Image (tube, rainbow over all chains, first blue to last red):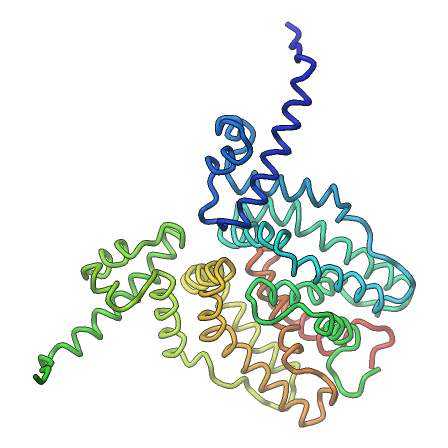
Length: 201
Length: 201
């Protein structure tokens, strides 16, 4: 038997999907992750909660898909700029990332996802696989190109080098130990590239 | 009217406090932070839940006090070793810290607190002020001594330098992006001290 989809069903479900994503992203910013419920998302999106349960097993899954769809739409996983000046390129991108993390609409759902991931190994696997690692990979790729160009020392593990840049940034934001300012990201990049030792290169 | 405390009351309340802390730390490892309740802690500790509510406003507060009491008992906030070899001292301490973070009894309550802090700015202020910042300060102090000894370049911001070491470590553990191995912490220390650039100092 051939399954015939009515002509409008695809468009209608895409509309519902988008409404559910918008509802999840805005609600988590308003009520926080703890108080976010499938019922609440359904109500805001104007769909039945069974529609959500048919597609997603949990609120974390809805939020992750919503956030990933947004990130993909914004081309977040593109390559880092490569002007030949690694320090300048890293500062440029980290300043833009600081602006983004300082924006409430971005930071509320991303924090909710990070918290859910830190709390639960299964959510963590999804979160790191679909959002965190692709974000780290663009740094790894840029650092590898810098290594090939001779700007970075040959023996450096570029994956751990990426952690050196992103770990302090994320930690400061997640634990609220300081502000994500341009001065902070500039200092971070310079320290990571030059190292702490005296004398400097 | 003079309030007379019965001779055993102080000792009894210290015993209850200790029982409540032990119950909170073991329960959070068994059921996770989400399912940890004041009722559950009271039941395990053999006290009435009003006893807990009289002393603490929330489960986060109980857990933070329990964890801080343990850390203070273990002298966690002592100074880092100073053998005159900064790299060796940092690797020594970070290897011990990796062992600790790889221990389930330590990591379950600490993760629960970190998650609660990431989720809630008020818990974050308590968590960073009482646990995180004192832990960072011992690194800042050691780095400042290395700077005075001429091992670290004069212009380096030692607070951000401490973030460079602890941020990637914490991030890897919290988001489960990799194992906390001795090889990882050794590489981390070498990269932070030497920097990424070619040529090296």
